[in-house]
Length: 233
Image 1 (spheres, rainbow, N blue to C red):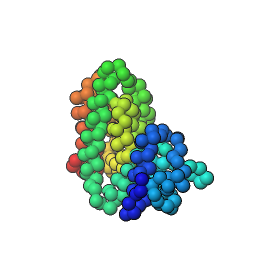
Image 2 (image 1 turned 135 degrees about the vertical axis):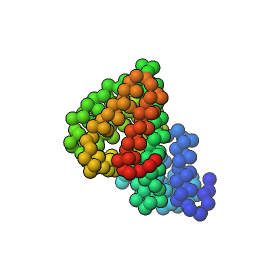
Image 3 (image 1 turned 180 degrees about the vertical axis):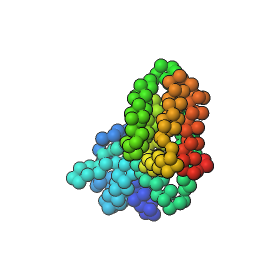
Image 4 (image 1 turned 90 degrees about the vertical axis):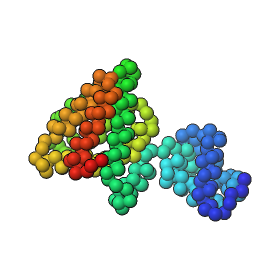
């Protein structure tokens, strides 16, 4: 089929995505060569090359010198970069990130509690991470890294790919959140034990298979985080 000439490489990129879907190509499968795609879409090879570059930038394809482009599994990196840029240019509010965390992580905590209560998952790994956090309260970077790992473990326990992807996309922003929260507590002469206590409440509710309790504990934790950052969600 012929493709309209306006915004050509973007249209070609859309056609390549359609081709991947219709051909049921899996991650790692090669797409047709540039010449074949150019003939199929009625465009020149340069338009196809630019479209492949654009799709590689979105992590939909993997492109390397001397090899045909291959189908990829996109991560949350691209959206995370967009989110970080929007926050830095102040076209998104930091408060909205905290609010979004409440919705996403509340849902994750609830689902994790349901699955643990049904015997479909356990909190053993989350418990081990919390114990390591307790040992690292005076090590800012390690404490924050373990904090992130704890929340990602809850996401894994919840076993919802969309929620995990959203949390992953917030990764860099959440690191900034947690570093600022840690510094906020230190500035006010407070220990990090309150953070441990908040995490323990979340974990206890999930372990007990109590979805409502898990949501409430997560909400309380994020409210404390907002106070550390002097943000009202």
